[in-house]
Length: 343
Image (cartoon, rainbow, N blue to C red; front, side, top):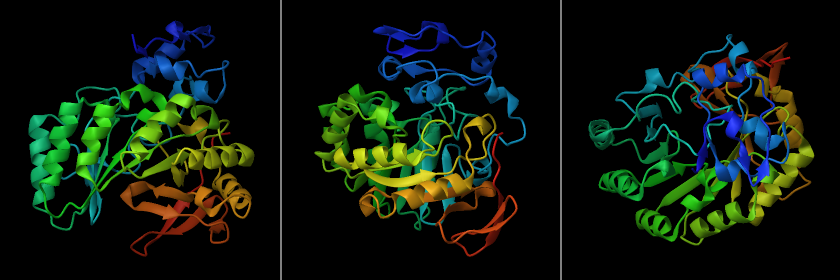
């Protein structure tokens, strides 16, 4: 069995006793649990950075104040499985499965729940929509994790996109190099490199995730000519520390992965215990600037509620009134953003 779906079964070469409360089964009944044996093997002790990212926590059920879909992806979906927020790009949700169901996931409402978002008919409709919308030049495969699909399914999707002349760039958002590096095979790399220009953004959150196996997976992709970026989420008690972030970002460069985004936690229901203040993120960016290569400094961004898009946050460019930040979107609209932190 490659996956653990029961906390009591959490062991991989070492014994990790299930010290979580029996009440956590209430959590897994609402938000499914799945952990690859590989990723479980990175856990050093209960409550460490890997544990916190993948093990259920009763606090997931205590956060009722926020919305399941704060980015309003559902309202931005012209056809099932497709999100069209920006004029020139779309997100195509091709899977609802991942090797690990991260407890902080922005799509907790979808991942591991129900049927896959993109069956044969849904894919046909999505491709027809993209083909009929010439402003779309960039398609981002997401989910779930696109690389959980088999090679034949990936080939079908990528071929369909490449047949649309105005689609110039394909991106894949995947945590597979981090959580299931064995999925990165020579056969998969040979498939992907047929569809250049193709970019991959992966998702390392902590230095403990940079291992010989994950490094090898990234090397295979890089040697296939695929540019690699990384999107890290700022997580309380996991990486909200300047030295941890410095080690992570410089470590990523050493395995040919460019730090791209540092995300402020989205205001997603069930994730409040992971949320830091925006000031904590700015403090980390200040600590990185000038102390590490500019290549190692990611863009610190907030994805605004209401589907208004990402806003880059700079240390010296934040207007604040109490807990409210005034931010400017890519359209020039000024938006009030509440800096909500779980106590």
